[in-house]
Structure formats: C-alpha cells, structure tokens
Amino acid sequence: MSVASPQSDAAFCAGLVREHDFDRYASTLFVAPEIRRALLSLYAFNVEVSRIRDLVSQPLPGEVRQQWWRDTLTGHEHGGVEGNPVAAELLLTVQRFGLPIERLTRLVDEHQFDLYNDPMPTMAALDGYLGDTSGALFALAAQVIAPPFADADHLAHHAGIAQGIMQVIASLPRDAAHRQLYVPLDLLARHGVSQEEIFAAKATPAILAMLTDLREQARQHLGHTLELAREAPPALRPSLLPLALVRRDLARGERRADDPFQPRPRSHLATLWTLWRAARTAGFRSR
Image (cartoon, rainbow, N blue to C red; front, side):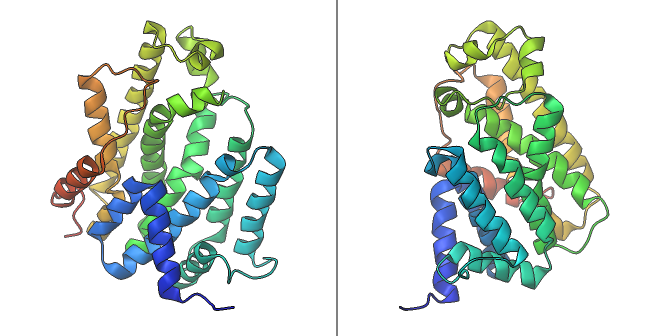
C-alpha cells in the first residue's frame, strides 16, 4: 500500500476546506504559503469534527468518531494516522507551532452538543460553545501566524462569538429542518417565540426581531474584537480576515429583510472580493 506524501496530505486538506468552508479557505489565500498550509490543517480538522453529525444517523457513532480524534490528539490513536491526511497534517502543525492539545480536544468536546437535539439553553451557553469552537480556531490561527500577544485569547473569544452568531443565523434553515436549535431558549423567551415556531420555518415579526437582537450581539462582539486588534501585533491581523465577511453580512442584514428560512449563500466571488478589499486595509494588513 502506498503511503501518502506530505504534499498530498496538504492538498487533501486544502480541497476539503475549499469544499466545506470556503470562507476560511479563501481567507488563507492572503497569507504566506507555509502559514497557509498550517491554517488549512486546522480548518480541515474543524471541518472533519463539525460535520460528524451530518455523517451519522445516531449519536453513538458520532461519539466514537469524536473519541478517535481525542485519542489521536493525545497520542492514544489506534492504528496510527497514516490513513488520515487531516490528522497527519494537523499533528505536524501542532508540533511545529507548539499548539495546545487541550484547546483542540475542547473543540471536539463542544461539538458533542451537535449530536443531540437538545436546544441551546442560554446566551451564556452559546457564548461558551462558540468561544471554544470558532474562538478556538481564531486563537490557534493567531498562534500560528504571530508572536504571543497578551490579549490574544480575549480577542479570539470575541471574534469567535461574532463569527459564530452569524453562522447560527445562516444555518437556521438547515437546523430548523433538522429540529435542532442553536438560538438560545432565553432569547426565544425574551421575544415570545416558541421552539415550534422556529421549526415551522415561518418568518414572523417576533422571529425577525429576535434575529435582529442576535445580530446586534454579533455586532458588539465584532466591535470589541476590532478594538483589541488595534493594540495587537500587526502580524496577527491577517488571522482575523474572516471577520471582514462578518462585517459584510451584518451590513447586508441591515439593508435587506430577507426571509431567514430561505438559504441565500454568499457567492464565492463576493467572498473573495470582500476579503481582497479587506486585506488591503490597515485593520487586516500585517504591515
């Protein structure tokens, strides 16, 4: 049996991220090739973990897959990682940049929520989930791309929540169809919205008001992130490039009253154009 080369492992990761997470894939086009490869290994790992729910019909097989990743990260993998290009690339990145294993395993742990149809109970719970998933990716990317920065974790936490909230809104059509609820119950209660109204996928005035509230919270976290970024080492700023898409989508949400239950994915061209323009500005440029 032939053994995959590091180059083919890297190409596999790039293809996986391009297909399943084009926003993050496109953001890596604006960094140096060696940094890009490391970031793509992180993002490919995230793709593999976050889509486990879509690949299993019951929670138990999903938990088995998640446990494989925990074992792999902690050095207890069964059978090695030679047949898994994402694991091979990720472990190279971990070793090269000294990434904390605990941060990666916590990301796996948080995605256990995805395997069940329990609703997200509170906004605080959602903040914790997003901070340990999207926020962890920002923190790890910052460690890859820049020297240590005292407020890096704080910045990454806010960045992850801003990006994650917008993903919750964008995924509402799919999640409602699966009767899965990431919009917190306390936010629903505040606006007098029931779970069944969400699952019915009808854009009532109360649901639209609730989503406006949710966007405002994303806007606040984005503002905190960009404020902290002004004090960060310039080398770190390209790791925040996906936030240019958050800013764009927030502005678009203010201008248009689209039905939130009708998928309207952003085109690849619009994504690339937004990131290209942002990469030329002081807020996201490394110099």
